Amino acid sequence: MDMEKLVIGIDYGTDSCRAVALDAVSGKELATAISGYIRWKKGLYCDPSANRYRQHPQDYIDSLVEVIHDLLAQLSPDEVKNIVALGIDTTGSTPCLTDRDGTPLALLPEYADDPDAMFILWKDHTSIREADEINALARKWETDYTSRSGGVYSSEWFWAKALHVLRNNEHVRREAYAIIEHCDWMPALLTGRFKPEEVKRSRCAAGHKGMWAAEWGGYPSQRFLSELDPLLNGFASRLSSETYTSDQLCGKITKSWSERLGLPSDVDVSIGIIDAHAGAIGAGIGANKMVKIIGTSTCDIVVTQYENLKGRNINGISGQVDGSVIPGYIGLEAGQSAFGDVYAWLRDILTWSVKSLPEKNSVTKDILSKLSKEASQLEINESDMIANDWFNGRRTPFNNPEVKGGLTGLNLGTTPSEIFKSLVEATAFGSRAIMEHLVNEGVEITEVIGVGGISLKSPYVMQILSDIMGIPIKIAKAQQAGALGVAMCAATAKGLFESVEKAQLAMAQGILTQYTPREEYRSIYDKLYLRYKEFCSFLEL
Image (cartoon, rainbow, N blue to C red):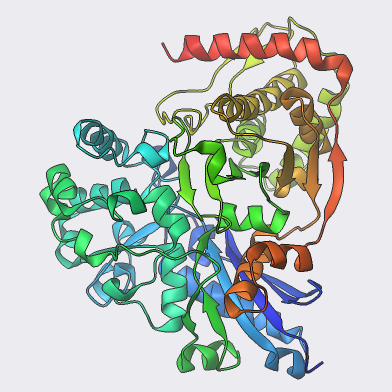
């Protein structure tokens, strides 16, 4: 037992914090725990009608304490003593304004209930105007700071969100001194390195969301930011030009946090990382493999060798960052703004009349599985109705948060299962569009690995996805791929492995199953895909 080294991976998702404890030598999972965000579950500080989604930093702290205590309660005292490192991933871009000490403003009494003082969740779309202004300025600037994010900066990202709050909330603006990503704040908090100028910032978050790139010296220049809006004066100097990959250490846990969490005092904390990228590591990403993290939305992660791109920037994707996923490779990010959320929309439409009934949950909980069963029995024809997947805008290819979803081919005989079938096919067509775009840009993709809730729970969706993408899809066995991936990063940062790739080999949980394209549907889906693209073109006019 004394020879074993345990590591903890902590995964902050949209609704909850999850943690796993693993034997770093064998990869054996020893304990798991989950804790929901109390304020978030109550719907506090959010306004879906305005696309405003905020999370209170106290939720992150409370869930961390609960999840670690629950985790350690499942371990023996000897196992707890052998915990040597932990890593943290979070959603992103999920930034927050802080004061001069690096404290998120919502943790100060006078801002405790102000949504603008909280972390702005990844799916918050309140800053469309600011993103448009960033794109317009970048296109005429001597350096195009959007060139590493596909040529389009998103309203879901760091600078747009911070500027929106600074412009629209004078009270918050008075105390705002710096900006921090959630995945940077958590390691900084645990290691006591949260002064803005001292924070070790994640290459993953900075490069994919903060317009950071080594070639132009780090983040955008202060001159660019001030031209964008004088309210950003001084903010560049509070962000170090240096960033760190997730296989590096942030520092040791502080005495106060080790005591509060019940962890050994010499635990090392690795650099933070965005959840989708950690999930890709945990799922087994490698050169020219695409990992699809499939849930309410999707995130498609690919790593490729430097020589494959030969210095080229790929237009229309979300990010292209050296070392953001696995050091030594270029990390590419794409994805869809809505996937499972599209199915949830149909579920809610079909059950709107029973929302006030006490037995609502019993009516709605199985509806998607029933729709899947019925849809799987429908014939697939070239004349089937068509839908598109832009219910929350389009992330890639070529970001546009303002486009809308649609369906065509409805008649008085259309059934709920036919609508559901068309929506599943639409989300798969969107995935195919992303893969084809990457391949057309010269990115080789030899394998697709699925991970996330839908990949594990919906065989119907995954089979259609394989049919339409025209490629076998392996399903990662790890149910907590994000926590597993960030635990691999922590083990590497601690020095237990020479590289993330070697940590993957030792700690991998393997493949659960595989879906293979059905040849008999190939030509039909090729024709339906052409109709999908025509419909998308019509909707974007």
